[in-house]
Length: 635
Image (tube, rainbow, N blue to C red; front, side, top):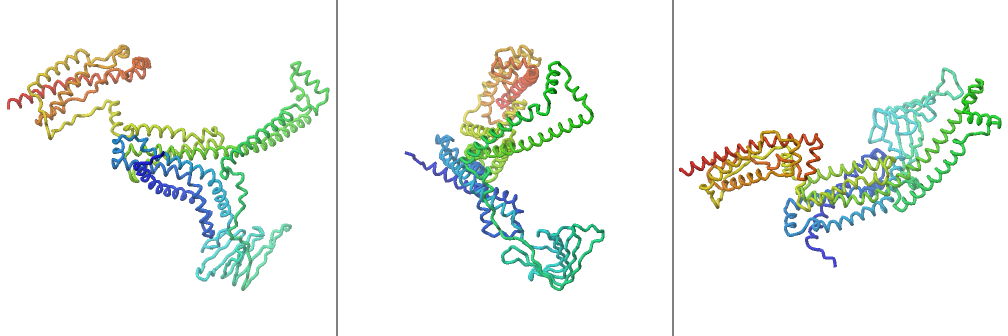
């Protein structure tokens, strides 16, 4: 029996509230981007509210699958960032609950979201795409509203250019009107100039009714058969003139049948059927083209040659004679006839194969679009789960909630995903990559990242801890830390000042003996360095342990001069002056590869010189501390 714990309810409630908010924010952003692309198709056309409502509704349905992955990523980052910032994640782990168990209810929930995303893409998406693109085409074909500006020519009415100097917006009267009518052609243009006028729409919204007052009309009378230089024209003065102009401003929905062959209007079953039919079609057409080519273009034509000519050509070929001699022996007229015939046949064949190649490429393009749409329904649904496995552990690692750092990180990850996914999609659509390879590239890149982050976060790794990377860089570059010892507020055991001088003196003697024995200032032997089978220097490790134990004991002192002197002890890198790797054969390989070996050789030499200086610093610090202890004991 499935038991839902209170912790699961708490995690689900925390995530779902954020997920709802981030989903609508992401959907709004994607809708604004989509609207910006088609804003020119809607502005100034007087579209009714129900048409605009349908446009926004269908566009929202088509953008739901694209909004879900980003919303899940952002919600997971904020949720687990809040858990980490409020130490709730720490409390859960302290109670023995691993990160995967914490994520378990959300994994089930996100799996359901993946199914919802797939349902939207496979069932709702094709219908919404059909409705949306039908609306878009209808909106593109709709004529704009007649809103004639002042002082500029208005050319939104087909065949007419209107100029209005002044317009009374309350009464609708136009003043100083100039009209160019190009319906009969540019050479037979009608020019009308009037003092005032009015433009109205008929009741059926199919025509414009033009009223003009106190003006003149000019019209050329040149016809197509008249070639005279001086062209007569007609001039007409009028007090009042009326004209009807065809102008369909009504919104008419186009037939949705034009979307029947589009890949984005089909579900997976229809896409698979289309893919199979196009493959069969291309195969059959390709075979027929091949047979036709082998039977005509690439087969020697002998019907124009006589039997005697054919025998001569064959005998010349068998006798290794130059067949071109037949052409050279022909007359100039015969050569021209042969060349023109060959060029004509070549051009005809090129035109024929260009047309056939275009047909094949068109079918191939449609086939790839259907295949990319088929794979996209799976990859976009699976992206929801992958983004969750990236966002949840990443939020637990960075431990920052709110809308600051999570938004920045999620946007960067989504941009990377978008670039990879869009690149793979275009490569697959254009036939440069295999379709499944291009469509699954983003999944192949981000899925290992999600697994890696989940593993690191489950093991409380410091994968995003800046201090860890700084320390690693310091270690590689040879930059070491400086001691900072401060006086302790509570001291339980005081240092044994009677015993310490003797141990310090013995440590100094051992450091001096070690430096003389190892000859640290001398360059090491290159071959002996890599062939030595002892990867560690146990002597320096033992000296370092003794020094650190003495420093730890003396740090309990109440003497400020003694604490200051303790900070003079160096922080020793006990393994930096020996071979870089633990494995013997790996070190041997490093020595054989001379450029790599030389790099490590000079690095080891530099660390040997630094170790020699560290031994001298230890000796000086021991002497200084012995004097401080001696002075304190005399007091």
